Image 1 (spheres, rainbow, N blue to C red):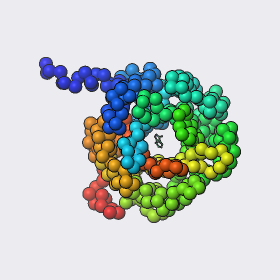
Image 2: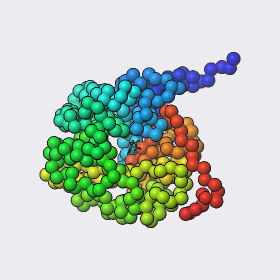
Image 3: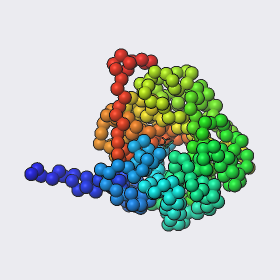
Image 4: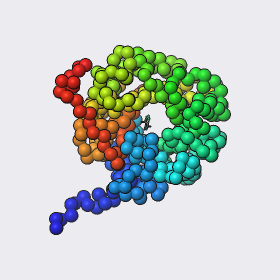
Length: 386
Ligand code: TRP
């Protein structure tokens, strides 16, 4: 018999969904400069929020076909970078993962979110006001409720709830968003939104935010790169050229001037995920959004994560943000080499919000179940467009 490997204990603990993701969170917390005590609190919170699926052995398949991540892990991490400070760690999770059907998934999500909010003295008033719109008896669509926690120092996170505009059927998504905005007092907000192909998420900041936002996420298929900068509706928002530059840097040299799809880039087999934009409303009187975010699914535009990370690093530098935490963050979630897969870096985002410096977000997949293999590019093809 061979001697047990020194990391056996850790491996055994990590061999459940909760153990795996809590371990990732603990290691990421250190990278983000959180105290040991805060990190422990947040790791425990994650396990509690996941509920019974936290104990699910990792050698079983994912609890369900969660849309939260490509391999259906109901957890995703992200780092939000700003100039001059350590990045903020956030975790997105699906508290109803593994529930028997979307109605129960939503009910579990609501129960868990209210429980956590109660613990932190956070009111869920605005969510409660919308319950009938987003939680019908037989909900449809790709999610029921997700929750994101911004893990700030002190052990009490900021909370965000993500709801599904297509809960009453995709054909009613726009109407659901319009009603929800109106109910929250944003009477003019719906007409301020740009055209998009789909209303993907409706999100609420809950609790201790300086200016809690109501956010509407839109998907944009086939939008020409030159038009993406024009999707912001913020007054005094970003220069369209800046948004286009970010997009081109994030997607790499394959992005044609005329669009993001239909070319013969390194992933011709796949239909790429759409770009997403988020429009944040804070002032009910203003009518126009006070924030604009672009999300680029970098994993569909890069052969492997090494390339995605190189682009993230370059963008962070351009914006005067220190990229140093990025590689340690990657090492905190995986022991594989970035070049050995694609999708660890799921999205790169650029956020503009009134009164704040621009932020860059890097979304890091847990990959609890699967790593997507890198795209195989023949040497001749690899040079195309360079
Ligand atoms: N997995 C989904 C997607 O890829 C939803 C999602 C998870 C998402 N994290 C995200 C969307 C970050 C935008 C940004 O679309």
